[in-house]
Length: 338
Image 1 (cartoon, rainbow, N blue to C red):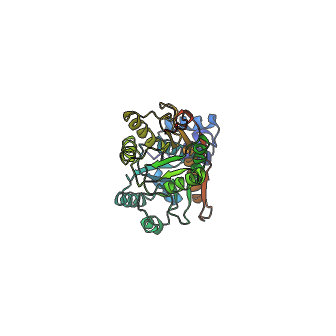
Image 2: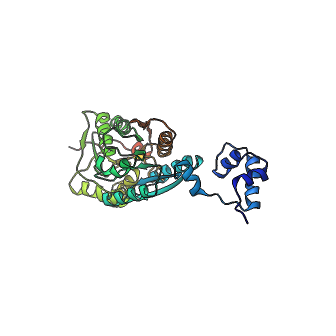
Image 3: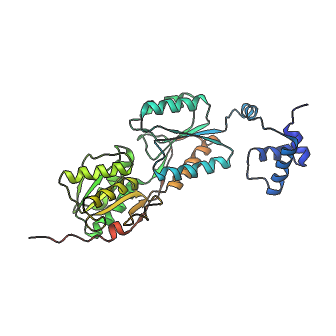
């Protein structure tokens, strides 16, 4: 029996071959009733789409890579869902890789994606990534967009305006009467440096800011360990600012365990505004850094390059928004003792 072709499907459904092709590739441009008629024809005739042949004709694999450090932070789960939704609408399949902030693992992941001929990659660079680390992508001319962390160069990049986010939080804490704050958690990355830069600018000269080299993974355990190091060093600030909300949640737990009530004994704030931040006790003051918008902008930028836009360096910064909740709203300056 001869193989059923797309032309057979189009004739059976009473549409053009081009329309049938759009339906097979999942394009939203076909009217629902027409798409349903084509899908019925596919089932009735037993048509199987030959993706390999189509890819050869297009010189594309219709696959994209999304590489990040991990998915334990809800911020990245939301970003991934937004990114996947938008590229899926354009007919792309997504390969996801996790580096766990390990350069060797990142190198293997990128090489594997190049071997599978992905059409483009969005990458959250692992710690220590340099321009040379991206040679496997560059040598094969794979369009690449960095997100959340950048390398300080001219590569396309999407992220929050971290300097603005830090400034918002610094100004808020200063307005409450905070005169001593400490920043904890995270790793030595571009996003951490920018958040600290903004925090310093917003807090101003009348606020003492401790920036101890207390780094941590983006986890609740990491946050608890970070604030414990701070307190064990004899530092008891008016406020603790955590690199992100997940770390702030660990700080919250550790403060309670030490008999310090977050929001009253010590003001507490983070960054990202993940969905569970408002449900903490007390509700966590944070700066929304727009995970879904970052994901959508990554997709738009990468798809633009694949669609023929010149791959000139471009930076997209999403505007943050301060969300004030009880973890700072309840705090009042400590009474001076004689």
